[in-house]
Image (cartoon, rainbow, N blue to C red; front, side):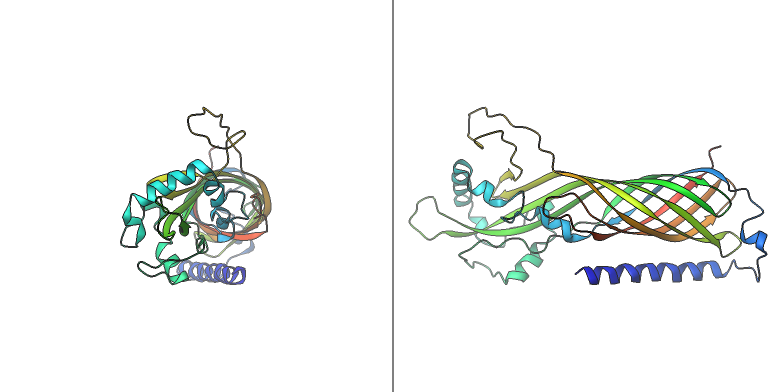
Length: 326
């Protein structure tokens, strides 16, 4: 899986740089002098500030944190093992026959992996089973990620920078479980449930930037450095029938008991992770005050999610607008 992901990442980088070469070909001068290669007609030194917006493509490895499997911090069995919730679920499912088959449309925010899940387990209309089917491999949806950029140029081509990005990621899937009937006179039923997760990531990148002139208005830029991220789990819930349940155990003691006025607390799941990154792209220098930089970032980092803290790659495709505010 990781090998395939890296291959795709490298392929995307290759496509971008081939595109850069094509786009800049029309602006190329036959030859640049040493001074012209360093953008001698401009003064690009000093502070630069910018904003960037793009699409973040997260590695699916940590999406499994939200799958509800028994070895996860948040798991489906936590809900089913609560006597009151279990009885509530039995009543709910047995009062809604539509949940016995697959002609019913799942809730909108659970749909993405539903068909893939049925194909994975060869689930047929009206079929029954005698064990829990957990979701197929969970996948993050691509998400918009805005950010801020601050850079100090030592000269016209080299500088150091600090960049921050923010993104909220979602994942969803379907699972099956065997659950008793209310009357206890027939076999346990095969029922569909849906699961979803949501997390917030904030990233800080610190690195060095270098760009190389390729045309009258263009340069190829390369950036690399260290990255730090802060991850917070916002949601990990399941829906069974019309009932929703939080997989995060936020009850202080004794678990959920109806009408007990039991205290709940906010549980923080997540933390700080680290890694490295490599950026590349095309810089359009419009004048001394403004440039536009479309590019691609490849991260290799870990997240602080329990059981899922290995280093994995992420991709971020963006457009950055840079200003000289002084």
